[in-house]
Amino acid sequence: MGGEASIAVEGTTIGAVLAQITERFPGVKGQLLNDDGTLHRFLNVYVNDDDVRYIGGVDAAVTDSDEITLLPAVAGGAW
Amino acid sequence: MLTLTPAQRDAVVATCIRALPDEGCGLLLGTLEGVVAEVVASENVAASAKVYEIDPKVLLRTFRRADDEGLEVLGVFHSHTHSPAYPSPTDIRQAPDPRWHYVVISLAVMPADVRSFAVIDGHATEEDVRVNDVTRPPADD
Image (tube, rainbow over all chains, first blue to last red):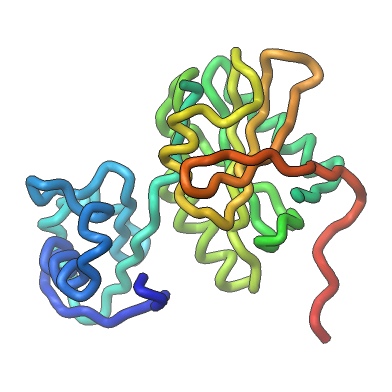
């Protein structure tokens, strides 16, 4: 992201963390969040090994020791 | 160019046949130059004959393995069950990485047609697929 594979951010929820990332890298905002603040359909966000869609989405809690991974969804279709 | 062994090519096709009637899919580990070291099959979590999505758990595990083992996730493969082995507009629009190799397998013909493409700036360009007995590139030692 911005040439950096790994960055340190602060925040107690995934939403706060993503907000901080979009402040630092405004160009990625449209790839992370929808206009209504929900997670973009084609983004996978993990807290350690957990997909955040199953632990609260943007409201998922994070702590100092958590590792958050962002990966693009890998998807397509025959049309 | 994409280079894979006969066994890896068979694993790709077998993954897609097992997924029928849905599209099958998986990731390719190796080098970004296109030398495949391992085929990683995924469930198609879209569970559809018209779209595919790599299981997010497989995605995370595969990227971590790549980091741990000094490999790259070099691309993705998926099948078209009733259409030619060419990326669809959806495939092109959603291609996540311009360095990747996008492998499309058509099961509309037998034997299956396996083709590979680069997708850059919304354009798909076919590349050669070489099937031979190469395995991992030599280690740097």
